[in-house]
Structures are given as structure tokens and as C-alpha cells.
Amino acid sequence: MKQKTDVEKTVRDIRRRTRKQYSAEEKIRIVLEGLRGEDSIAELCRREGLNTNIYYRWSKEFLEAGKKRLSGDIVREATSDEVKVLRSEAAALKEALAEVVMENRLLKKSVIGDGEDGI
Image (tube, rainbow, N blue to C red):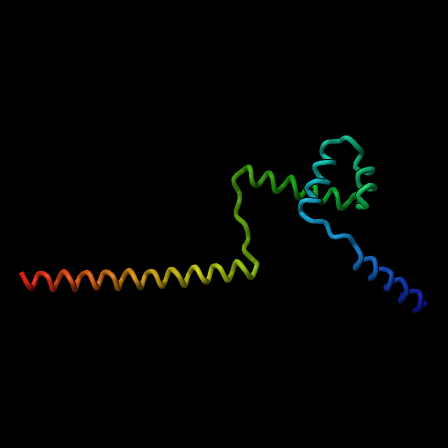
């Protein structure tokens, strides 16, 4: 009994690791093909080697994203490390710019002040 469950687990692991990964472009192409209605969704999924539940999930996500975009709701969550790094760099640059602007103002005031003394 244990050997059978070990074998089943191994088969599931192999299937999981060898499962095709679809790019965003492939997902969009498949969803649009399904929306065209030239073939049934079942036929499309068979041809693409895709479970119909996956197709319907992609389709729902695609349509919801389009609806949000068209309604102007384009706020995106920034969770990637790269975005966090860019935000911290932007904050550091803003601070540096503020310091330079302050120094520039102080220098202008000192030059103007010196000029008035000489008049």
C-alpha cells in the first residue's frame, strides 16, 4: 500500500515538474482564440493540451483585467524587489536634489549679501 502511494506521489511530482509553462502572450492568444468561437473551448483546450478549467480561469482574469483597465483602475501592487529598489533609489535622489537646491539657495544668498555690502 505504501509503495503504491509513493509511486503515485512520484508520478504527480514528475507531472508537476514537466507541466508546460505558458507565457502571458500564449495565454492571451489562447483566450482570444476561445473568444472568437471558431472552435469549441473543449477542442481548443485539447489542441493546446490545456485543462478547460485553466482556460476559463485565464479567460476570467483576462476579462477582469480589461474591465479594470477600461474603467481607469490601473493601480498596480508593487511587490517585486526591483520596484522596491527603484523606489528607494528615487527617494535617495530626491533627498540629494533637495540638499543641492538648499545649498544653491544659501550660496545665492551669500553672494547677493556680499554684493550688497560692496555697494
